[in-house]
Every structure is written in C-alpha cells, then in structure tokens.
Length: 331
Image (cartoon, rainbow, N blue to C red; front, side, top):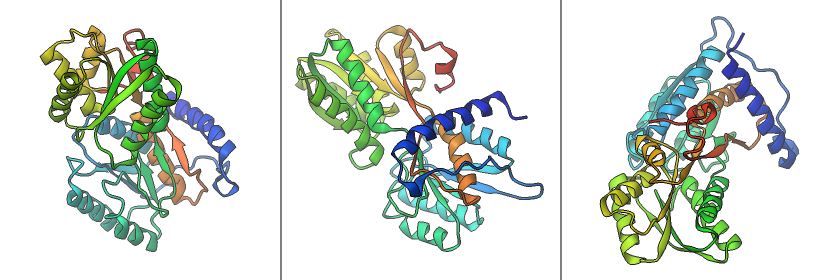
C-alpha cells in the first residue's frame, strides 16, 4: 500500500485536474487511467534537468522526485548546471541523459531555442519531454508541471495591498525579464497593483539575476532613489534574500513592508523575527513528485492536460509552523 503522502498527492492531482479540465480543449482531456507502476524487471529511467542547482529549491524538487521514484519503482535523477547562466553545462547534462535512452525526460530550459535540437532528437526516438518549473517553450513538450506564477505574483500584490492599506509606492526585484517564470510572476504582481489598487504605484522593477548580493545592491538603490517607498517584493529566493540583506545593512527606519518568495534560511528567519511580513511559496516537493508521475504517464501513452498547476500558498509568522506549511519550506 502506498504511503499516506502518495494518497494526498493523488487526491491533490485529481482536484487540480478537475479545474484544468473545465477549461481544456477536448484533445487535452486527461483520460481516467489508473496509475501504473513499472512492471517487474522493467527498468524506467526519468532524468530531471534543472536550470540551476545553486538554489535549495531544487533540493526540495529532488525530494519529491525521489518519493515518486520509490512509489512507482522507477529511477529518477536530478541533473543540471549550478548557475542559471550556464547554458552549455545544461546542454551537456541533456546530452548525457539522452545517451542513456530514458523512457521520458523532464526539463526546465535556460534557453528554449538552444535546446530545440535536443528536443527534436528526443522526439525522433520517441522520448516524451515534460516541462517543469519554467518549462520549455516548444510544442514538442507534452505538458508542463509548474506553479501558476501569474497567480502567485498576484497573491503577493494582494498581500502587499493589505499591509499598506491599499496605498503607497512599492517596488519589485526579480531574477530576470526573459524567463517565463519571472515574466509571469512580475506581471501578476504589477498588473494586480495597477488594475485593482489605484492608490498604489509600482515605481520600478529591477532584475538581479537571482543573486542575493546583486539584489541587495538594487534594493539599496531603490531605497535611496525613492524616499517614499513603502513596500518591496522579492520575486524569487535570491531576490528576497538580497532585500533582507539590504534592509539589515541600512536599517528599516521607514518601516518598509517586505514580501518574499519561496523560502531558504534567510527568509524563514526574517519572517520569524518580523523583518519580513511574509512570503508566497511554491510546492517544490509536489512539483518533483508530479513531474516523475507525469513523465511515467507520458511514457505509458496517456493523454495529458497542457498544464499541471502544483499550487502556491502564503505564509507568515501566524502559520509558518503549521505542518502543511513546514512541508513546503526548505533551508
């Protein structure tokens, strides 16, 4: 019998599918096929190729993938470059994985155009490709297992509006303006503030490459340039950690409200002590689990929805120690 975790994941998947199928076209309707484990003696290999392993976020993805691998009796590995700028290193990881003839591959591409020849190679030999996290901009990809990043950015905006009484200047720091994850998260935040809160203004959005030190410098620049700033949103782990470092250095004499994203020790500690109001976190464990499960479904020839939302949630001092929140956090 599978573990309770497995049951909860399956239940969550079912609920998510209901919502996705309401808006899906007939060709994307998920078939109600029972989950199928690898048969005795059948070796199934599913590599997950990440964009950059320097963030602990991918450690949590790996934990979820390992759980799924045990539950479904498959081999799942997490590979990829350390930095999200190391395109060639990611291509090398993809090439190495494909050389093993995997039954399916899961990929979060640094550059969707550069990986195209590898996707075409996988397609020619019948290896289905599943997107994860930022995914891959390609029709070859069967589906993407990821966060609804626009919705997550919108939630951060709603919480910022609550903190500021729907008035005041705010700014955002995020990793880049090229990946779909960053674009969606940024647009969700900016659009929600602009369209729903006329008393608020997003004065600037800065891009810190996800590097805490670079993001800290940008945060200090914003504080100096906009003396009336009342809120800062760090749109990913590195950006949030950078804002925290900046505030610790210059002090928070203006009582600037800070919202982070994901987790990590710096962010968790800052929330516990009240320096940061709260954060929106993804569910990287479920993302890893569902990526492996979905890759196995693709290998089995099942019809998949075009997008599988793994969810997001707000946490702050009031709920950070709740078991359902603790399961999502990483240090």
